[in-house]
Amino acid sequence: MAGSRKSSVLLHTPEGVRDIYGKELSEKKAVLDSISRRMHLYGYEDIQTPTFEYFDVFSREIGTTPSRELYKFFDKEGDTLVLRPDFTPPTARCAAKYFLEEDRPLRFCYSGSVFQNVSDLQGKLRESTQTGVELIGDGSVQADAEAIALLIECLRDAGLSEFQISVGNADFFRGICEASHIDPDTEYALREQISGKNYYAAENLLIEQKVPERDRNRLLQISDFIGSASALKAAESAADNERSRNAAERLAAVYGVLEEYGLAKYVSFDLSMLSKYNYYTGVIFRGVTYGAGDAIAAGGRYDTLIEHFGKKAPAVGFMIPIDLLMEAMRSQKIERKQDAEPEVFTYSEASYSAQLRKALKCRAEGRAAVLLPGRGQDGQ
Image 1 (tube, rainbow, N blue to C red):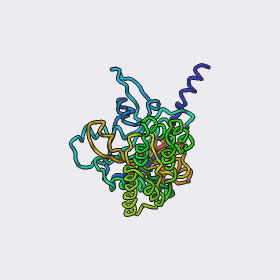
Image 2: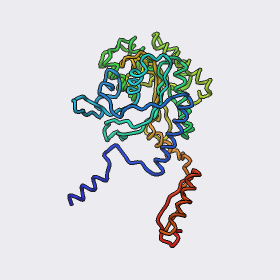
Image 3: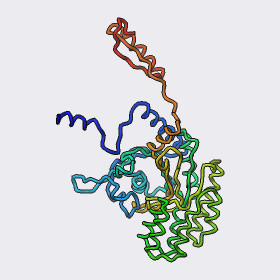
Image 4: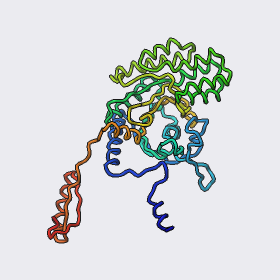
């Protein structure tokens, strides 16, 4: 009985990971291929970083994934290593290491597994597939717009037609906090509440911290600036500090470039949008559609991140969580075109050579062929 139980355990995967095969995997690879083609059309080059990195690459000072959500382990020298939770810090490290003196903008695209040690109750995969891009060395409005436009085209190439890219600017919130003299710890806690749209908890936090009513109202008003371009105009009018005003004006400029791309219809604004990644410094954005449990894309500008690795360079990028994208596509009944089923050639001992020739001819013509042992005299 003990052996039987052990065999049963060996057949199962741990919580938060899963096997993918057959049609599902074929569709996933087709989606990844179509997205990769679009990235290459924009001039992005493939980059591959290690599955695990030193812990410091994802430290709190850099502003990445919280330590409690990292898979940590030790190497034989006693150094702390982590499985990568996202691709942006490793790509930043790589850019600083190999392109330290490079002045031209760098365009990288990637695809692979990421790992997050989340609770079973959150219903998220602990190992998932991400693809995305990083545009390093270009701090312009046009670079922000390029990242958003490329994301929109990637999602359309994947097969989606009904989705929205919600765009904000991290500096808008930071400007209000600065003007309200909010300390860094309170800002961090407040960002968590506002990013989760929990404005009641945000208000309680501000009251506990004895933030004056005028400043509380100014901070909570951020929830009003959500929607079309009119919401952006309202944010511009309400901004009473230079940093927030510049953030709103930057978004207006990005929107203008997206209109030139002919993609503005996919864009809405949310000035209350924030991220758990503290390295975002400017424009941030998120892709949403129905049928997925979370955002199907996320990205933004991170102008100070690469400096942690020794290279001063502005940057912007995005990532697409492929497993969530596939979940949305299944919900919306979007199917990718599948390769033709392989032609099957059954054979007997006597007919093997003839059937093999047929299979080889099929493969030479680019068609799939399978050889199977048969029972008949001639194998057919």
